[in-house]
Image 1: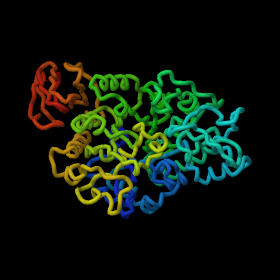
Image 2: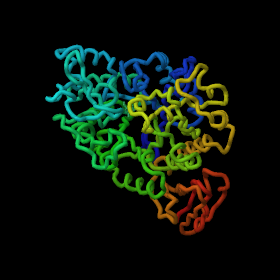
Image 3: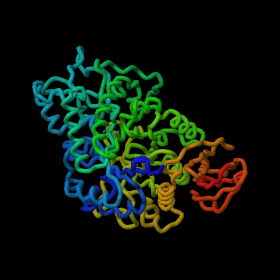
Image 4: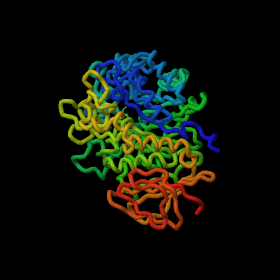
Length: 532
Ligand code: GLC
């Protein structure tokens, strides 16, 4: 039965990057009152849950992923009053609100770290990971920071190094210290008590590092010139076996509350990703599945990835799919605008909770960032490798007015040059727009038990460029046929005819013959089929 599923299984998640969604006070940076002002849009669109990237006080070295106070609201974004209003309004509209928990590290300006670095004897010294220099001088081992260079930073005052898996301004907490766990769990309680519906937990697989601080071995597949972080196999710095016990205890805390969701940010191969469901579904509800972001956009590749993912899911584990986020190039840039429509259809018809990224519903593109406007710590740390994340973080395009209706003041990142064509107001008026397609897909998914909770079965394909599958529940049976190429293709399956429910391109409508279905370039179709 449909009702047996929880909201985070039936619903879709929409990620908001608060700096870039809507600026209500004219300082060029998005804020909570801005989000509140756009709630009608989000409800019209038809998403079920909003996930906000961090909104806590932060020096913004990594735009909020460097938290200076886990229980406050960054003044740039508003006040706790604004947050409470947003939470109330979200719930009043029947939607859910998820926050971002960043437990692996704090800001170097968090009071915990200020105390920790004050002296070796400070009671909070052991809340972070401090080590002596190596015997020959220099960093304690060869661990690398994701954002470039050594993961160790020397502290002159106390003569030791601290670990930062990310930026120098993001010291790693020491999760082997039970006081750290207790303090972060109190933070989780604080927000869940307020009524927040769950968390996306930042780099949850990084929480524990090798107890012996062993050097990471070299990566034999590394090619010089690539991101230096890939020069090692990171076997001692993340995905350590001890992390699962922590996640289990974290999950138990979530389970003290009704229907809260715990999502883990985990970039690992599928086999390892699955271990984050726990041995008995007692870890993350949804270990984020980033395959649609990471894999080459080919029908045969994606089809096989879905098959393998479904096959590996543990009993009772609920699938999920992510198409974009604030760390990766936008889908419309990765696959082109025509295929982005196919991708949206795929995301919203696969089995499992879909997560989409603000602006992808408009087919927003990455925006080229002039050198002098680069803001991202990763691009600043490792320039020129194409790793900058500013391009996918540019302001939401609301209308054709100045600054795309995002802000009255100068936006913190440039607005896309094509905003006059691709924006909410324009696309709402255009029946052929990406936005209208996205909204129809969301509405269809909501009203269709087959799509929201039904079974999944892939079908043999008449072309390597076509991915087709069936979703089925009770007497509802939908056939999804996706042409991943920019050329016409043919799909054929048995006989009989089927009704076109939704298509990504014009020209497909009414009833089609399944024995010989000619697919237009970039065509994705949702078909209603009878018993076969
Ligand atoms: C996660 C976030 C990313 C951030 C990093 C460090 O990967 O998604 O934006 O820079 O963690 O917190």
